[in-house]
Length: 611
Image (cartoon, rainbow, N blue to C red; front, side, top):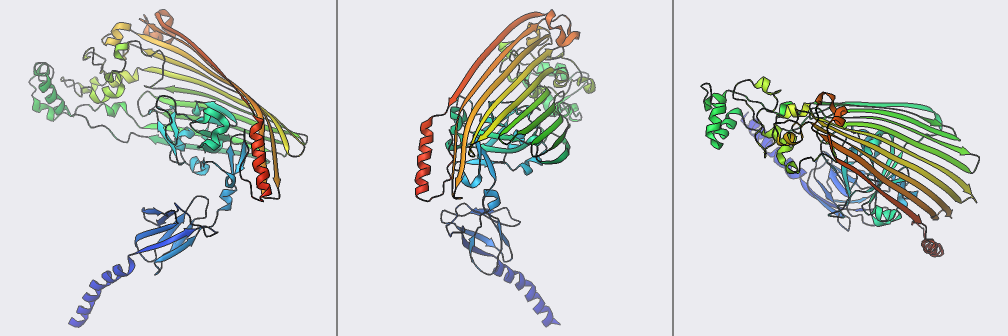
């Protein structure tokens, strides 16, 4: 019996050590393509583990702490992903096979489309299937983290606000780093991307380097984002409906003082005033250890509901293709009295006329309403002394307003108006009262239409005329009644201007005309010549006007009563810009020379001729 027990103990102790010594090891290998050339920067990972390595310039890699029967994942863009099971071997020569399906994908660049294998510049494509899974109101939000070299950051947390998109880092310290957007062939600078329903987008390509963006000149210096919307396809009518519902919640609150900590601080700061306010009626500092106090974040922030509904009808025949879609988005802000609502519709039709003509129209209309604490009102700054004052911001009051009254009526304190303003330099007020009485709205109407007529002749030539219009009308409204920090007579701001309000209007319009002649021919399945010549004319205009009205006698009329006050800060503005782009024939001759030389050398041409 003792002998059996001894053998069992030796086995129990020795088995884990033997397994550990046998299983853990370091492996090495090389990764090559189908021709035997080494592949650098191939990603090597172990299934179920987060650690990974990249192959070096010679395609070599080393992986430590590997166990037998682990599964090694070898992946690289443009190649088929491989799964390799670890055996007793320590060396693993691997070969990746080209993913022809990916390389044959069509990529939109400039005034045309090419296959991915023919690209000569850096172009990033968004996986639209993954993007459709993201419940976001704008494609900008879904773009974050999906394309290498593209950085997306939010301007603020306000629903409906736009995002900052920077491609391959900022190029300028003082000027804008915003990329150029090309929506269905229409170049637009600083568009309202909330006007586009993400469910209507078919593809997004990001042009990153000079060879890809040269077609747009200086406008493409910060990169170009190419957006192509969904169009009708040959087949019976297809009705699609997509919706999502969600709740947004604040992820973290800033720690604030308890009632006891706050009173103790007030006594240290100014004991006579602190005793007068907080130690009356027999109260002592110890009395506040039992009081909870008000954490204003619990009342200013909330769980916000959001919903989106999209419906579309698409179909067509060999001669006619059509697409009709609409969407509704409603998003509450996590800050009270804030939100974003959007109504959007799109219509697209393409008609073939005979054998040589094609014509089409693409139209989008969006109406949006945004309200909340952050609105870009051009006439907002009435008092220069409060400009830049940190205490004038909502969250400053949320974190810095006192948590108790000293009289025990904390429930009434939540809805108590401003009877305890600190002073001229400190604009902290009751954040709940201030937020609930804020009237800050932005009304936006966006209209986009693009039409084309295309004529094919001499088998390899096409002449296309494009015409487009984008127009955005924005109306900013703000009204400060007596229960807001900007309109209450007890605040320095309200004491100077009283009840006040402002209205600003902004109109942005872009007109485009393109006349393009293209030549496209393939030779012997090895060579291809793609040349473009044309004239492009674009005109953009911006017009604005607005005014501020102060000392309003009747706040019950709200924004409708601005005409009864004293009008000040009347503003008007306007700017115009015209762009004409002409094709230079010397570029075409250079491309033809390169083509003929390659043809004589029997080499495959992959360069696309653009202008």
